[in-house]
Image 1 (tube, rainbow over the protein chains, first blue to last red):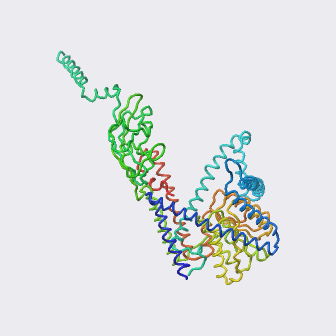
Image 2 (spheres, rainbow over the protein chains, first blue to last red):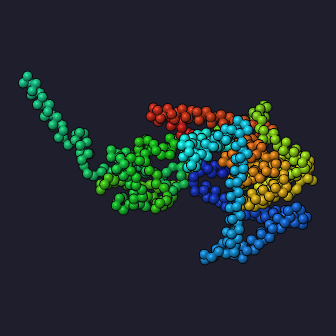
Length: 216
Length: 424
């Protein structure tokens, strides 16, 4: 049993890890074909995994409704919305439009989902303002530097700011192209090395906690 | 005096005789400037492009005296072994002062000719369909106004290759780094290695302790990506360490997911962590639950959990996009301790401004080593640091050599620079 739970997954990881690391250096169509096939496998497995996810969702919210936990009404709304959308989707054969006419499934997507997503995204503007207000209070030296840099960049990025302070345009470009870009690249180099090191550990079975912890 | 004058006349006659000789170099030069027909491109070579999937061919030919922006080169192609250039189709055209070997992206170890030669790689696309294993006739024509000089057609057959030699430097560097990591792991097994403090990870215990005191849950997010992303794997690994401590402290753990596969993996990790903490009875399958794969629906749901359940500590590990600030700002408004760890450099400013502690970039990958202190994990960190030291040296040396090359107009620095070009 331990062989099936431990050794087999590690062996699969080792072989696939090495094969797909090598695939990067093989331009032959056979290699590309293999990558395409495996990507399709992943999509198929992902489809099955979605069943797992949806069943988890139903289970968690069913418990909330049954126990009448705080906020169980939201769970009820979720059930109604989900079952309703599935029913409408089946009724419309999963199509959003037929012969240019919007189906009821398309209506739900375009007039419910899209506006709701847009609303969430729009809230971001207010959250940026509140986060900026808290961060830009010059309570420490670092916060003061952040404030000054932010003011220069903001002035340099809007026409009015550049009109009022002509130097701010060039200065903000310098901050973005020199200071910001160099720090970002330094972070990316560290991230890349971290990624390669983690991949090596996983491929060679040194990192096993993703299998469910333990060192046996 | 008379002898001198005669000598002068003889010299003039001799010079004239030399000038009117049709085969003389001086005359030939004059003829080149005045003749109306372009000489065809010389030394044409065509071959299957090395290190490709068999969908391109490469042509090499010698530079000509008429290479300029005004003159154009045309690439002519036909299937089979046609020798009549009139039957060949023009598939590419460009100014004659372009497409030199030195301008190609190929590194020095795969360049097929000297830098001053012309090179053109014909690929599939834009009306060209090269089939692997099919023979083609190909040639180059020089065109200036109405004049056209067509080179001798040559035969070529594109073939797929098994190794991309252009990226062999990537492989060598990856193997070198892998060797360094393995060496560092070996060293860490025999020698204790110093780990600098990472305040964000020191705060993990404090956050869990605070949640325990307040009797509130801990919220842990694994990011927007699936298990194929290393940052999600790192987040899942850290979840194991956090879950072990929440199990020990008997604190409720909430892990909402965007990807069902990540959810399944994290359920296993959490279960194992509770087992190792000696509290298997406290483990709940529902602590890891799926919400949705949709970005903003997920964000709305998690924000709702934060506002209703008011977790005492929020962990944001893994990759994030526009939802980062929506999540962390809501968390900050509830007064929770917030610890973020991400390699999404574009979201780092939002995490830094709204969270109490942020693991920046590689610190996310170092977290597992920091929390476990296992030699294998710590050794990997040492390997990464050696790798970073090497990259720093290469950056300094590369900058110096590139500057020197530009100042002296020398090509030899390219030998070094090409080795580190396109490393990814």
